[in-house]
Amino acid sequence: MREDNQTYYDSPEFKELLRSFEEMIDNDRAIYFDGSDIADIADYYTMNMELDKSEIASDYGLRLHPDNSDILIAKANNLLLKGKKEEARSIASNISDNDNQEVLYIKGVIELAYSNIELANNLFSKAFTNSNSDLDLLSDITIQLMDNRYYEQAQKWLDIAFKSVNRTDNNFCEIQADLYFETKQYDSAIEWYNKMLDTFPYDTYPWEQLGRIYFEREEYIKAKECYEYIEAIDGENFTASLMKADCYINLQDYDTALEKYKTLLDKNENMASVLSFCCGKCYYYLKEPDKALEYLKRSEECLDIDDTENFRIELYTLLAKLYINLYNEENALKYIYMGLSLDPDNKELELLIYLTKHKQ
Image (cartoon, rainbow, N blue to C red; front, side):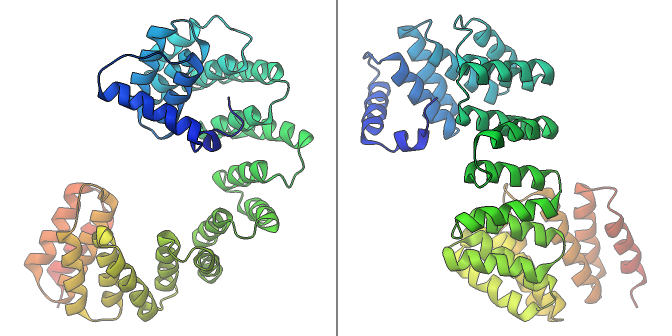
């Protein structure tokens, strides 16, 4: 387990190694690679979620080095990410190096996939003991437990970490803040994200998380300030600009929100369905039905496979309301039933049917 994988992956040494491997695959020929190098290549692909490439690398490595622990670990991790936990467990069980911290760690991760928390925790404890208290491993264990929603266990491992590192350590501060965020202990999360900002005030991540908390609490002015800090640090941050516009619309400042959404739409045609909807929503609240209809129809025309059912229902609901206000019963009912086809129990859409029939 390298102390800084990304630094190594960015190095000329690794880039040349990766180039040689990919040339070998492209040219359908075989050359020799050291076992640890193949494992690094497989791990790199896994980190970038190129799981098929990772599998090709690990399978090739195992033909050269059938018993190499690093490659077997990479193979097991790949299978686990593909949802093939039985195959992952089988691979891991055949690794003979049972005192290796990484072997114990991957076995623990596999047991987490089976919800065997006690066994997983025992394996993690052995891995940590054998690692000579490796803080990187401790970080990995805590994150795995959080990802699997074992928050109490994650907190226990964090408590161990803070016995070894200063409570201002940015890595573990972030993990602690995220744990509080995930468990909706927002006051504590705010405290810990602010600890991060005391050390690294130009880190956009804690500002983003603080914005999410304040937005969730409907404290839109505070949320907006967080997104403004992000924009000051990173003027091209799309998410911050979008969320800032969302704050304005929730503050009922529809003119400012509309201006922000239009600016984003001009620069992000790939987000036309969402941003056109936001513009249409502003015009709807500004009581400009013709403009609202123009943008909402554009949003409908731009819908694609990435747009969720919830977003489509929201769009169809707003179109239905607009047509009700325009006394167009036929189109109102069309969009109501389009929404109900996605969510047959939607109470708001059912109420709109009544309003459509009784609109004076």
